[in-house]
Length: 194
Image (cartoon, rainbow, N blue to C red; front, side, top):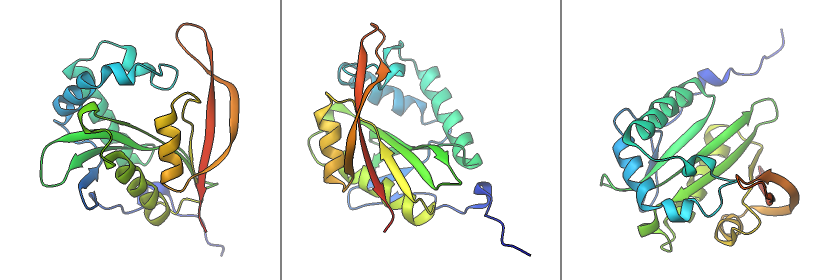
């Protein structure tokens, strides 16, 4: 008898990831109001790169944010997608969102992305969160590769990739299209298991 690969739904995952300053966890029912507040505060920054974050162009609402959370927890449990909320430790202050997306289980490959709440950027908190998400991918999900595709003009995001140990692989030309019809280039970063 051959060993069959484990089904993703059977992977046991921690309820939360704790870093020095953060608690990182899947969305929960009722988190929508906090996501809404963080997104509204950060709309100007989120809308700078609409090809990367098209959802930020929609009019925010508590209902839409709660729907995101409910869909997120469902997908997390089903192991289809791994959205995560970044909280200041020992508080109910949401400082950003991110996660692992587009799992390709056979190859052990995931895509990561994130956004930070404007009033908490520049403090290294999102870097701390993304590093923890990457560590979670390799330790808990047996990832072989995690990719990030920041917009070529989003220097803050691609510099963050470099700070967390991701390697620049090249630029994907005209990889996305913005709502105004302009093609956007994305940088490809990755980290692979050792």
